[in-house]
Image 1 (cartoon, rainbow, N blue to C red):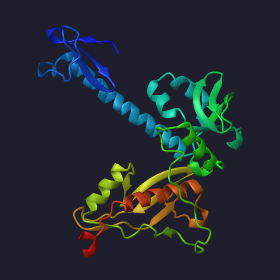
Image 2 (tube, one colour; image 1 turned 60 degrees about the horizontal axis):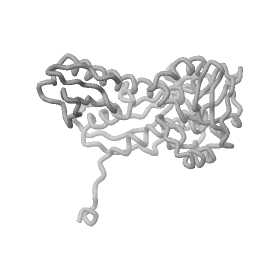
Image 3 (cartoon, rainbow, N blue to C red; image 1 turned 30 degrees about the vertical axis):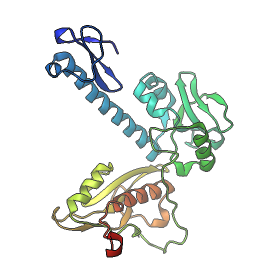
Image 4 (cartoon, one colour; image 1 turned 60 degrees about the vertical axis):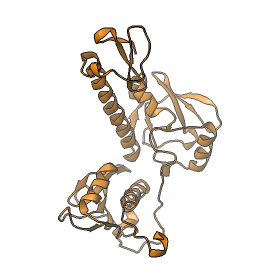
Length: 291
């Protein structure tokens, strides 16, 4: 970014997300002079950094939603946003696949996204080859949808891949095969104690889960249908003690879904939410441990 004129002959610019300043002799200063803190040029740069931070966060939220909700993404859209550095940083090295007319994909054509143009998407496949695939629609698959997940993780480690969105190394859960017939609730992460309900509610918010009717909610769109994973937090006085409760899955009309019918993405994301909430519980140390 170019240097901007400020008061007293100083100049300011943005470097690595922070405001840099140089004096009239061209020397870059370690900190911004107090007299410039309210300078119009500095205020403008400060507002720009705040906007850029919001922009980055919104992009990551969009991409994460594409993955969790199994949303098809027009390849033309990727080509249009690729010029934006923030979009490019969020999308580069995510594992993508080309969708067919029925919404399916060939796992052999999965690869790390490296480019997107009007001519197609450029990926690095598991053979280490850079190829360009023509596509109308693509997807950012949830890791439970990737049959070669172990190979992709190993290859990503070899390449030194760092993904902006937690995809390949996202912790996943697999639905047990021995569920009780007709069961509708999971209690694996129930009973986590918090000194006050507001602490539990705040944890849900910090993790990105909205709270409605006493439940932390994770929305998933899977196999053409939407549903919600809901983890009970409580709806009492926010200053009283609280415990994490059951994890349930419901349809858009509010009807519960038998656990045996919950899809792999919904199961994994619901359990991920419940585990993350439970991890913030109060853990009492024994006298021997405290010593």
